[in-house]
Amino acid sequence: MMVARRVPATTLSLRKIRADLGLSRERMGRLLDVSAKTIERWEERDTLPASSLLTARLSKIQEVAQLGLTVYTAEGFARFLATPMAELRGRTALQLMAAGEFEPVLAALAADYEGLGY
Image 1 (cartoon, rainbow, N blue to C red):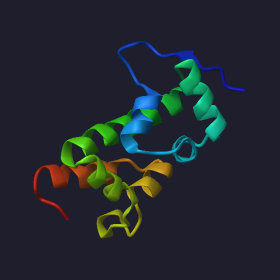
Image 2 (cartoon, one colour; image 1 turned 60 degrees about the vertical axis):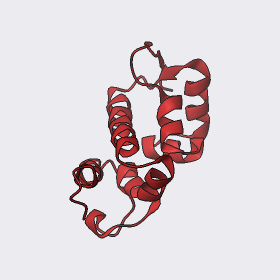
Image 3 (cartoon, one colour; image 1 turned 90 degrees about the vertical axis):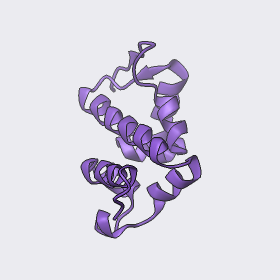
């Protein structure tokens, strides 16, 4: 069993990241490779994973969420996350993120932000 650590006020917030992405606990759990119950427990206790790998992954997810909401409206960002795209090898951003592949997702968002699009 992994021990969770208390979240400092100025750092990652699992609840906020999940809300920004518009994801269920189940879907967020898939992104972090943990159960929905674990996500629920971390949110209720306002804690983060003890694993530095999971914390780093959550940080990347937060980076995607922040850039995505800068580029798109909440509805547009939800479509971006769920729509298969050629620039993402026919996969969705959520599928790539679940596989730990954040750079193609960030690159697609950056291109849209700069008006280059794909």
